[in-house]
Length: 269
Length: 272
Image (tube, rainbow over all chains, first blue to last red; front, side):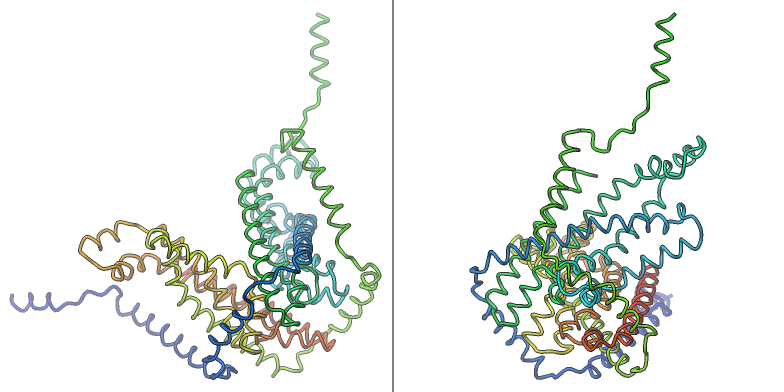
């Protein structure tokens, strides 16, 4: 009797059983080893690390106060950035919709087109906007066209994937009803599929437009137009106070973009 | 009788019309006009260099001609670049996730006082507004070229994303457990550690995995502005017209991203 009571008081409550604990410790150990390996192997000059807070503070001090004399150039570059984002989003629609149609399991004509569609979507999403921009600057030369194409090629994967998912979730019955009356393929798409995915379509496009504004701000760093050109120029000239103004302008633009997006979404959905 | 005939003829002759998506005709045509005006304005103000653009197609042919077949000859360079990218992404994720916990607590309305809440939200908004590449050039300017700038950049990038979602998660926790802790007289820190964190832990691990995946993508591009990793190698290959090597790098980037997407998706499915 006494023994049992002692056993019960000595028993320790634990949240995980032995096996779960073993798995946990293995994960901790692997993570620790990976950290040690990464820290010791990476090519970092450690004195710079300890000096980093000073350097960052120093840079911040050089940026203050922001300098507003170049504001007309900044506003124009901002407009260019917005134009790149908007035009590329509009153009993406024309490419992404057919691709999403063939990449959705229930509307694709055959297996080959299904995989073709998926391949286009994956390769579009895997390559970053900046890398697309690098490629298009090499082809078409520096300028807004390279920027528009870069943002467009990146957006195809995003819009196409989400639209494909929206198409896969539609109600089959209107489609069947249309087919039963002998409607043509075109009419089925127009009257049975489009009305069902239209709200999703607007939500996705508006969301992508918001993302594209952010993406467009960096295109200029590789010469593809927008505010990034001005930013890179100011950094090259060590005009840090102008850089601060440009950064503030970008924050304002992003916040305006988010506000417009949330208003539009409330209206549509 | 004739009246009835006329009626039925009218019904037959009437065409069904699809209702418009935007019912108000003024709004509908107004939007079309606004779009057209916008397009005209955008195209007339943007500086297109048409002569340079028209040279594009032969150039594209030359680039893609030079890119095939992709060359994996300089395997050593590829390996160091990708290894560095991975190390940057890994360390930045750990640091970022670690730092995002206090910032998420600051930015959660239900556990932080108002001024702290505003400060936390401010940090999140600023770190989310800038594309990682912009942050990367700033850090390169501050701490010099190399992986250090990359790690700092992606840490900030991770904070923006993880702290935002974590803060939302904290705001939605079951408040009963916190009240239970308070009723037994636990302090603020104990309330956080035992009342709040266990509730957000699974979510936190899922977010970390997602962030590792997205940091791996981003680490490929911060190198373009000199912040270490494979991006620098890619930029050099483009600059020296080594298109076959650049194409090999691109293919590897796509492959690795697909793998990491698969792995992080699998882990998140296991946890949730």
